[in-house]
Length: 83
Image (cartoon, rainbow, N blue to C red; front, side, top):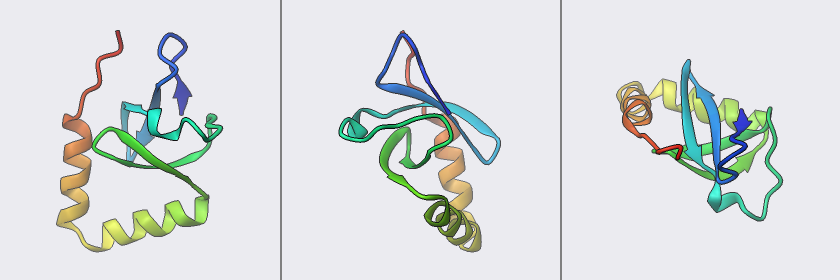
């Protein structure tokens, strides 16, 4: 993950091989840094989580199949303008 220098409310993240800018504005009370695990949904960071929680969430999404595929497709389609 990388915080975009010209847009501190945006970060570049990688999810299952998809790199995308997400809005981290909802995490304004959190310190967010490269390497942190973030729970995201359609382009918005919802909360900072630990690696164990992240693995459990990914394992769950992968286990339900189509919903995980739909979430990745939504991530690919979400686009935040970077200025």
